[in-house]
Image 1 (cartoon, rainbow, N blue to C red):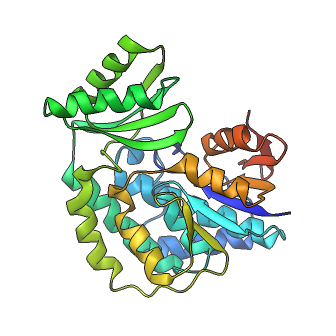
Image 2 (image 1 turned 30 degrees about the vertical axis):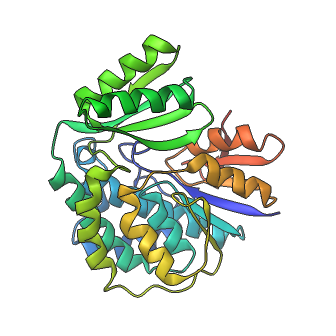
Image 3 (image 1 turned 30 degrees about the horizontal axis):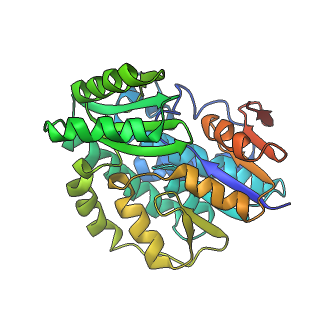
Length: 301
């Protein structure tokens, strides 16, 4: 059974997401290594207050993704493909054995700090559900012509889009779209404007750190959600990770590509479930499951 592991991005985080793990050596090892590298307990990362900061959110999602994927592998469930949304790409690279967990911790800590420092407040992301792509693109272009800082950041599904930019520009975009088409709009629990040109400078700074890290060719197929294709070269994975914060996410196209390759099972790492819902629309006859904190799977419709 061809299997893909998916790893969620910011917005999926939950207080206590690094607590209550199974009493298993895989989790204990991940916790010990992460706490040693960070010189702090994991409980410092996943409290409600701690998760207000991008650094902690991104580290918590990385650690959770790696721990659960390694546990699945220990249970005999392996990935033929790995794909992460935004910060989830780092966990995907670790599970593909292209990037060491230690180096991922260091890079993600820096990534979160760079993004938070660049935009400490007043910026974020907004999801639109139900609008057409044409309407969203027209509205964004209209606001950009008025010098409003807003961009189309994520193309998640045929009618699900995420905008990035300044908060007032995001709200203006939502209003403009809703004046033309019926749709739902919601600000996400993301405090930075990811996947748009605003993050070019932080990405360039991160790229310098990435250049000092050793990457290996992946042992399973690594999917770039920005390029919507398989990446096989170590240097291309390094580039994907360094710059993905500033690149548009083409999740829908990447997911369709996996379906066309004959994927039969998609497992989403905790604490996510949204990616599972998106995949079920493309793979209704397949197994699209989210790994739960109860040490099993749950189906998302």
